[in-house]
Length: 125
Image 1 (cartoon, helix red, strand yellow):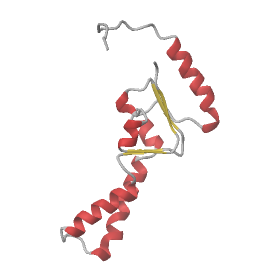
Image 2 (cartoon, rainbow, N blue to C red):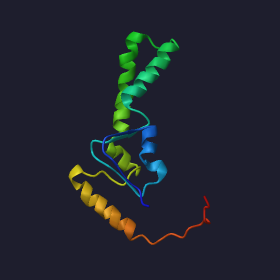
Image 3 (cartoon, helix red, strand yellow):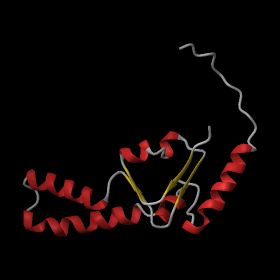
Image 4 (spheres, rainbow, N blue to C red):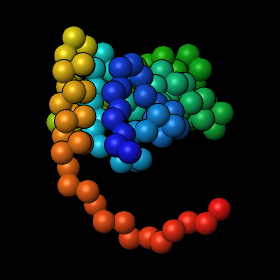
């Protein structure tokens, strides 16, 4: 059964796995322009890193906002769909109004793929 994945908003961490992200080898994985993909959201990552530094005494609480700003900016930039597509992490950025057409092309491609030989025996339950 072919798997097709459209990322339409945020896809972070374990949720990316649960929704058939790249690690589960979907046949196609597309992103909408407003989607984001990352280990976690930038704000959450910045808060965790700031808390660790504050707890270790390496960061004064009043300097936390200044510390977080570049982290959030980095996550925002690297979680962008064009950043992901440029690195071939997905199969392209799709405008929402083109979703149906792109999905139809994907279904056609999957249907016309030659069948693959199975390399395992019968599983008895």
